[in-house]
Image (tube, rainbow, N blue to C red; front, side, top):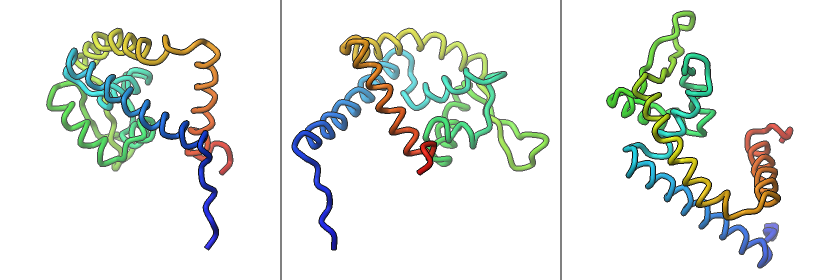
Length: 155
């Protein structure tokens, strides 16, 4: 059995800081959205992704990929949001198996109300803590991670 390449003390500290910081950040942003708007961070992200597409509509499979949710988790989230009148699902006429997810007017209203508070939270809990160079570095780091994890870098 080959000995693992253990993390150095510096690597371990950075890894743990990332885990702790990212979890606390996500928890705080989720808490703020739930308290002020009655929606969690995953549901907010669904609304954001839909808002970026024509007619605020996406195939469920693409929405799952874009939000990095499993199809099962997305289906449950969308079902809850449908019950609140925020989303609707509809069959894709030209594809017997495909399903679209469509943001309703109520979903759009909620997104427009929540977005300023969410952005304020992202700013106060992350962006404003870093200088511009650190933000650029953070962006480059997570672009590399994303590209690696999605196979964009050829892996």
